[in-house]
Length: 303
Image (cartoon, rainbow, N blue to C red):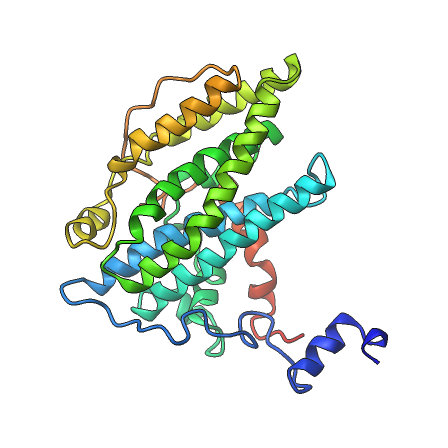
Protein backbone atom coordinates (compact mmCIF):
# COMPACT_ATOMS: atom_id res chain seq x y z
CA UNK A 1 0.00 0.00 0.00
CA UNK A 2 1.34 3.41 -0.92
CA UNK A 3 0.51 4.90 2.46
CA UNK A 4 2.70 2.29 4.17
CA UNK A 5 5.78 3.26 2.18
CA UNK A 6 8.23 5.93 3.17
CA UNK A 7 8.56 8.88 0.83
CA UNK A 8 11.91 7.54 -0.35
CA UNK A 9 10.54 4.06 -1.05
CA UNK A 10 7.69 5.50 -3.06
CA UNK A 11 10.05 7.62 -5.12
CA UNK A 12 12.32 4.66 -5.71
CA UNK A 13 9.42 2.47 -6.83
CA UNK A 14 8.26 5.17 -9.20
CA UNK A 15 11.57 4.86 -11.02
CA UNK A 16 11.52 1.08 -11.31
CA UNK A 17 13.27 0.32 -8.04
CA UNK A 18 16.66 1.65 -9.10
CA UNK A 19 18.58 3.94 -6.81
CA UNK A 20 18.60 7.53 -7.99
CA UNK A 21 21.61 9.80 -8.05
CA UNK A 22 21.42 12.57 -5.50
CA UNK A 23 22.61 15.28 -7.88
CA UNK A 24 20.68 15.64 -11.10
CA UNK A 25 20.13 12.17 -12.54
CA UNK A 26 16.67 10.66 -12.29
CA UNK A 27 15.20 13.93 -13.58
CA UNK A 28 14.51 15.20 -17.07
CA UNK A 29 17.39 16.97 -18.76
CA UNK A 30 16.74 20.71 -18.26
CA UNK A 31 17.14 21.48 -21.98
CA UNK A 32 15.64 18.24 -23.29
CA UNK A 33 14.01 18.74 -26.68
CA UNK A 34 15.41 22.26 -27.08
CA UNK A 35 17.68 23.15 -30.00
CA UNK A 36 20.85 24.31 -28.28
CA UNK A 37 22.70 25.23 -31.46
CA UNK A 38 24.46 28.56 -30.98
CA UNK A 39 23.12 31.12 -33.49
CA UNK A 40 25.49 32.23 -36.21
CA UNK A 41 27.84 35.05 -35.32
CA UNK A 42 27.71 34.45 -31.57
CA UNK A 43 30.81 33.41 -29.66
CA UNK A 44 29.90 30.31 -27.60
CA UNK A 45 32.38 31.31 -24.90
CA UNK A 46 30.70 34.70 -24.49
CA UNK A 47 27.24 33.13 -24.42
CA UNK A 48 28.34 30.63 -21.79
CA UNK A 49 29.98 33.33 -19.68
CA UNK A 50 26.80 35.42 -19.80
CA UNK A 51 24.66 32.47 -18.76
CA UNK A 52 27.04 31.87 -15.87
CA UNK A 53 26.54 35.45 -14.66
CA UNK A 54 22.77 35.16 -14.70
CA UNK A 55 22.74 31.60 -13.40
CA UNK A 56 25.10 32.41 -10.54
CA UNK A 57 22.96 35.40 -9.56
CA UNK A 58 19.98 33.08 -9.25
CA UNK A 59 21.85 30.27 -7.49
CA UNK A 60 23.45 32.48 -4.85
CA UNK A 61 20.29 34.47 -4.08
CA UNK A 62 18.41 31.17 -3.83
CA UNK A 63 20.88 29.97 -1.23
CA UNK A 64 20.54 33.21 0.73
CA UNK A 65 16.75 32.92 0.74
CA UNK A 66 16.82 29.32 1.94
CA UNK A 67 18.74 30.48 5.00
CA UNK A 68 15.42 31.88 6.21
CA UNK A 69 13.83 28.43 6.34
CA UNK A 70 13.02 27.81 10.05
CA UNK A 71 14.04 31.44 10.74
CA UNK A 72 11.39 33.55 9.00
CA UNK A 73 9.04 35.63 11.20
CA UNK A 74 6.00 33.53 10.30
CA UNK A 75 5.36 30.15 8.69
CA UNK A 76 3.60 31.54 5.64
CA UNK A 77 6.56 33.79 4.89
CA UNK A 78 8.97 30.91 5.34
CA UNK A 79 7.11 29.05 2.59
CA UNK A 80 6.97 32.15 0.38
CA UNK A 81 10.71 32.75 0.58
CA UNK A 82 11.41 29.08 -0.05
CA UNK A 83 9.18 29.21 -3.14
CA UNK A 84 11.04 32.26 -4.42
CA UNK A 85 14.24 30.32 -3.86
CA UNK A 86 12.89 27.33 -5.79
CA UNK A 87 11.98 29.58 -8.73
CA UNK A 88 15.51 30.96 -8.75
CA UNK A 89 16.95 27.47 -8.47
CA UNK A 90 15.01 26.47 -11.57
CA UNK A 91 16.35 29.50 -13.44
CA UNK A 92 19.88 28.71 -12.27
CA UNK A 93 19.60 25.13 -13.46
CA UNK A 94 18.49 26.16 -16.95
CA UNK A 95 21.13 28.86 -17.28
CA UNK A 96 23.97 26.69 -16.01
CA UNK A 97 22.82 23.89 -18.30
CA UNK A 98 22.97 26.36 -21.21
CA UNK A 99 26.50 27.34 -20.19
CA UNK A 100 27.46 23.68 -20.07
CA UNK A 101 25.88 23.02 -23.47
CA UNK A 102 28.34 25.45 -25.09
CA UNK A 103 31.31 24.01 -23.24
CA UNK A 104 31.81 26.65 -20.54
CA UNK A 105 32.65 24.36 -17.63
CA UNK A 106 36.04 25.57 -16.42
CA UNK A 107 37.67 23.35 -13.85
CA UNK A 108 34.35 22.01 -12.57
CA UNK A 109 34.21 19.09 -14.99
CA UNK A 110 37.67 17.95 -13.89
CA UNK A 111 36.45 17.69 -10.28
CA UNK A 112 33.03 16.15 -10.89
CA UNK A 113 32.36 12.51 -11.76
CA UNK A 114 31.30 11.76 -15.31
CA UNK A 115 27.72 10.99 -14.23
CA UNK A 116 27.16 14.50 -12.82
CA UNK A 117 25.25 16.74 -15.28
CA UNK A 118 26.92 19.94 -16.44
CA UNK A 119 24.66 22.23 -14.41
CA UNK A 120 25.42 20.31 -11.22
CA UNK A 121 29.14 20.29 -11.97
CA UNK A 122 28.99 24.08 -12.31
CA UNK A 123 26.95 24.54 -9.14
CA UNK A 124 28.81 22.14 -6.86
CA UNK A 125 32.36 21.85 -8.17
CA UNK A 126 33.52 25.39 -8.93
CA UNK A 127 35.66 27.31 -6.48
CA UNK A 128 34.66 30.82 -5.29
CA UNK A 129 36.79 32.68 -7.84
CA UNK A 130 35.00 30.87 -10.68
CA UNK A 131 31.58 32.32 -9.77
CA UNK A 132 30.36 35.40 -11.64
CA UNK A 133 27.43 36.74 -9.60
CA UNK A 134 26.90 40.32 -8.45
CA UNK A 135 27.61 41.68 -5.01
CA UNK A 136 23.90 42.36 -4.51
CA UNK A 137 23.01 38.67 -4.20
CA UNK A 138 26.18 37.70 -2.33
CA UNK A 139 25.81 39.96 0.70
CA UNK A 140 24.59 38.39 3.97
CA UNK A 141 20.86 38.59 4.63
CA UNK A 142 20.89 40.97 7.55
CA UNK A 143 17.54 41.14 9.33
CA UNK A 144 14.21 40.42 7.67
CA UNK A 145 13.73 44.04 6.63
CA UNK A 146 17.05 44.07 4.78
CA UNK A 147 16.24 40.73 3.15
CA UNK A 148 12.97 41.94 1.63
CA UNK A 149 14.59 45.17 0.44
CA UNK A 150 17.32 43.13 -1.24
CA UNK A 151 14.72 40.79 -2.78
CA UNK A 152 12.82 43.82 -4.10
CA UNK A 153 15.94 45.31 -5.68
CA UNK A 154 17.22 42.04 -7.11
CA UNK A 155 13.86 40.96 -8.54
CA UNK A 156 13.12 44.42 -10.00
CA UNK A 157 16.47 44.37 -11.79
CA UNK A 158 16.16 40.77 -12.96
CA UNK A 159 12.57 41.23 -14.11
CA UNK A 160 13.53 44.28 -16.20
CA UNK A 161 16.35 42.22 -17.73
CA UNK A 162 14.35 39.07 -18.42
CA UNK A 163 11.51 41.06 -20.00
CA UNK A 164 14.01 42.27 -22.59
CA UNK A 165 15.83 38.96 -22.95
CA UNK A 166 12.64 37.40 -24.31
CA UNK A 167 13.77 38.96 -27.61
CA UNK A 168 17.29 37.52 -27.41
CA UNK A 169 18.75 36.01 -30.58
CA UNK A 170 19.65 32.93 -28.56
CA UNK A 171 16.38 30.96 -28.50
CA UNK A 172 17.37 29.10 -25.33
CA UNK A 173 18.05 32.30 -23.42
CA UNK A 174 14.84 33.82 -24.77
CA UNK A 175 12.83 30.79 -23.59
CA UNK A 176 14.42 30.87 -20.13
CA UNK A 177 13.60 34.57 -19.83
CA UNK A 178 9.98 34.06 -20.93
CA UNK A 179 9.54 31.38 -18.28
CA UNK A 180 11.15 33.56 -15.63
CA UNK A 181 9.13 36.74 -16.14
CA UNK A 182 5.97 35.64 -14.26
CA UNK A 183 8.09 34.15 -11.46
CA UNK A 184 10.08 37.36 -11.03
CA UNK A 185 6.91 39.45 -11.17
CA UNK A 186 5.66 37.56 -8.13
CA UNK A 187 9.01 37.96 -6.32
CA UNK A 188 9.05 41.70 -6.91
CA UNK A 189 5.44 42.20 -5.86
CA UNK A 190 5.79 40.02 -2.78
CA UNK A 191 8.87 41.92 -1.64
CA UNK A 192 7.19 45.27 -2.35
CA UNK A 193 4.23 44.37 -0.12
CA UNK A 194 6.59 43.58 2.74
CA UNK A 195 8.57 46.80 2.27
CA UNK A 196 5.32 48.76 2.37
CA UNK A 197 4.15 46.89 5.45
CA UNK A 198 7.41 47.35 7.35
CA UNK A 199 8.33 50.83 6.18
CA UNK A 200 4.92 52.27 7.02
CA UNK A 201 4.52 50.13 10.13
CA UNK A 202 5.84 50.68 13.64
CA UNK A 203 8.72 53.05 14.39
CA UNK A 204 10.97 50.04 14.93
CA UNK A 205 10.01 48.32 11.67
CA UNK A 206 10.48 51.63 9.86
CA UNK A 207 13.93 52.12 11.39
CA UNK A 208 15.08 48.60 10.53
CA UNK A 209 13.75 48.76 6.97
CA UNK A 210 15.43 52.12 6.36
CA UNK A 211 18.69 50.60 7.60
CA UNK A 212 18.13 47.76 5.14
CA UNK A 213 17.56 50.23 2.30
CA UNK A 214 20.78 52.08 3.12
CA UNK A 215 22.75 48.82 3.21
CA UNK A 216 21.29 47.43 -0.01
CA UNK A 217 21.64 50.70 -1.92
CA UNK A 218 25.42 50.49 -1.73
CA UNK A 219 25.25 47.13 -3.52
CA UNK A 220 23.50 48.58 -6.58
CA UNK A 221 26.58 50.39 -7.87
CA UNK A 222 27.87 47.56 -10.06
CA UNK A 223 24.55 46.52 -11.61
CA UNK A 224 24.59 49.18 -14.33
CA UNK A 225 28.13 48.60 -15.58
CA UNK A 226 28.47 46.21 -18.52
CA UNK A 227 31.28 43.70 -18.68
CA UNK A 228 33.10 43.18 -21.97
CA UNK A 229 31.06 40.02 -22.51
CA UNK A 230 27.78 41.88 -22.04
CA UNK A 231 28.90 44.62 -24.41
CA UNK A 232 29.76 42.15 -27.18
CA UNK A 233 26.60 40.11 -26.73
CA UNK A 234 24.40 43.21 -26.62
CA UNK A 235 25.83 44.28 -29.97
CA UNK A 236 25.06 40.77 -31.27
CA UNK A 237 21.43 40.95 -30.13
CA UNK A 238 21.82 38.32 -27.43
CA UNK A 239 22.24 40.22 -24.17
CA UNK A 240 21.01 43.52 -22.72
CA UNK A 241 23.19 46.43 -21.69
CA UNK A 242 22.53 46.69 -17.94
CA UNK A 243 22.69 50.49 -18.16
CA UNK A 244 19.40 50.31 -20.08
CA UNK A 245 17.70 48.90 -16.98
CA UNK A 246 18.72 51.62 -14.54
CA UNK A 247 15.87 54.07 -15.06
CA UNK A 248 13.17 51.40 -14.86
CA UNK A 249 14.63 49.79 -11.74
CA UNK A 250 15.20 53.14 -10.04
CA UNK A 251 11.61 54.19 -10.78
CA UNK A 252 10.20 50.96 -9.31
CA UNK A 253 12.30 51.20 -6.16
CA UNK A 254 11.58 54.89 -5.70
CA UNK A 255 7.82 54.35 -6.02
CA UNK A 256 7.80 51.57 -3.42
CA UNK A 257 10.09 53.30 -0.94
CA UNK A 258 8.24 56.61 -1.09
CA UNK A 259 4.90 54.92 -0.51
CA UNK A 260 6.50 53.06 2.40
CA UNK A 261 7.51 56.46 3.90
CA UNK A 262 11.17 55.54 3.50
CA UNK A 263 13.95 57.85 2.40
CA UNK A 264 15.25 57.08 -1.08
CA UNK A 265 19.06 57.33 -1.14
CA UNK A 266 20.88 58.89 -4.05
CA UNK A 267 21.50 56.36 -6.80
CA UNK A 268 25.10 55.12 -6.47
CA UNK A 269 27.73 55.98 -9.04
CA UNK A 270 28.18 53.02 -11.42
CA UNK A 271 31.38 51.07 -11.01
CA UNK A 272 32.85 47.85 -12.47
CA UNK A 273 31.56 44.69 -10.85
CA UNK A 274 34.13 42.82 -8.79
CA UNK A 275 31.75 39.87 -8.50
CA UNK A 276 31.50 39.47 -12.28
CA UNK A 277 35.31 39.26 -12.29
CA UNK A 278 35.34 36.50 -9.67
CA UNK A 279 36.27 38.63 -6.67
CA UNK A 280 34.12 37.68 -3.69
CA UNK A 281 33.91 38.10 0.06
CA UNK A 282 34.76 35.69 2.85
CA UNK A 283 31.01 35.47 3.54
CA UNK A 284 30.51 34.01 0.07
CA UNK A 285 33.16 31.35 0.65
CA UNK A 286 31.26 30.33 3.77
CA UNK A 287 27.97 30.26 1.85
CA UNK A 288 29.46 28.20 -0.96
CA UNK A 289 30.93 25.69 1.46
CA UNK A 290 27.46 25.18 2.88
CA UNK A 291 25.91 24.83 -0.58
CA UNK A 292 28.52 22.39 -1.90
CA UNK A 293 29.34 20.33 1.19
CA UNK A 294 27.21 17.25 0.52
CA UNK A 295 27.98 17.06 -3.20
CA UNK A 296 31.71 17.31 -2.61
CA UNK A 297 31.77 14.86 0.25
CA UNK A 298 29.61 12.31 -1.60
CA UNK A 299 30.07 13.06 -5.34
CA UNK A 300 28.43 9.80 -6.43
CA UNK A 301 25.81 9.56 -3.71
CA UNK A 302 22.49 7.80 -4.34
CA UNK A 303 19.21 7.91 -2.50
